[in-house]
Length: 382
Image (cartoon, rainbow, N blue to C red; front, side, top):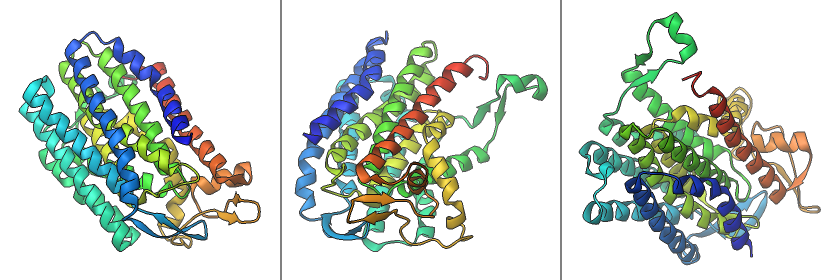
């Protein structure tokens, strides 16, 4: 029953995306997206079948809100493996049977492969973190290492477009940042990867926020493809992003059906690292990093709230979870600087499922605000 509800809600989230996709005039682009969607759906079904099988081999003692339970951990390795298989198989089929402009372009093909290398590297490092429990300071370094293949292969532009209100004062319309742009790419990869990891702690939150952001990214990409009919390079950048985000959405949706409260499995750092890196890579190579950061607004707020503890200004415990009352089943916010605890302090004690719904509603509101902001500023700001 829970699986059908989650799939139904996610289908509602994707209705605007499907509607906009069917209105695209370019049949080649539409065919490419639909073919990738078919592969993603197969990935969804495979993930649903593989999670119960893998759960038998990944069960560990897990301290969830101070209750010691025996539950499968690190199921992100299943999602990451299926994701890579889907994307690689799609790439091979597209080259062999349906040559696409994106795939035929050797420059894009190199960046495609480098993106997959970075994602694969992050899956491996995340699984190592789950097994060895790496200190949190090292978690800032791991995404930098994983982003190196992408940076080495990146041949796109390093310029930014100056906002129109500032052009008369600066005297130029674009600015080449050079190496600073690649540094920005590194920092974005580090932030996206770790922001998913620290905005966590309750059943369904890590995967749920990924599903909401991924659906917003898909809608944004399809909107930009439709709005840039005469710019094939811009369309291909967003097409590349869709090729990565559709499989991410599908496999994450399968995991969410097991991870929703009461969770049957736990995702581990493997999933949070993998999901964050995938969205960062899609945003960088899709050239919409500013929009991606607005989609990540709750994660930005969570990071700002966490700075005093991360910087060591105030004590930072290993786990910054809310307090659980076994008598009532309610969660109470602590003084730890996380958005989870902030919501509990602001709105009062809640059940874990209710808290997750509130946090995901905030995530959906942030994505909706981003689209409203883009609609208000388009043509005036840029």
